[in-house]
Length: 326
Image (tube, rainbow, N blue to C red):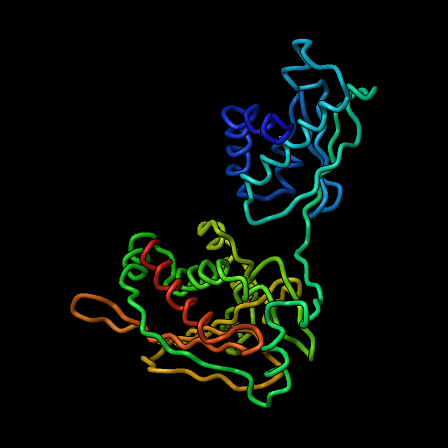
């Protein structure tokens, strides 16, 4: 059994639930978790760089196999490192972390200390010729009108019902489903920009916010598989944007734009075709209440270099599937 599997077996039943309780108590705020939550006689947390770098140290080796004399090789400390990585992956499945062993008792130190770093999202340029979009890049990168729009009417009855029961906004639920469907399609992680092709490792949903001065601002919300976490991010970030009248952008995320014009029912929305904004865009108006179901026409605009019509159609179908499964 490798250290990863050994670590998971060691912590999944007892240690992981404890960390989940602490995580929930502090609403996922790592700065508070490592300054307040991880603070006992046997272990202590410390914030090195707010929002990014943390330290976790133990006054004694917590490995049960070392305690009972079955292991004494310093290589066993890798099992502890893997256990921390596993716990972090369960607390925040959509985040990425690095864990480094600073020192351990088996290595001659007086404490076992680990450095945890939250990775930022990554945006990197890739060669179009070596990507699956090589032919599309050749054909459409210099096109004066490379954007394509598809329209599909969705059954959103389930979102309406969930919103009424949970108190979550319809737009929030819709945005989460957009992110969930997009996250399952590879083409959403690649984007043409200024004659180049870029690849990302995470997604965010852009929403338009009405600010306190009567204007509008743009707000990027990192997508999370956890709808409760996404809802918290949505509420906090849009409220901040409305209050400060200042747009916020996540430059290292692939942005899926949305525009919800809920003042009236709309059959189709076509955004401006411009090389200044090549991101995919999902747009809708007010949903329509029928006798037995609620429907919503959705317009999806995308850059032909990023994806073909078949990919876009599959996205719209997955969007309907995610709504149905929610």
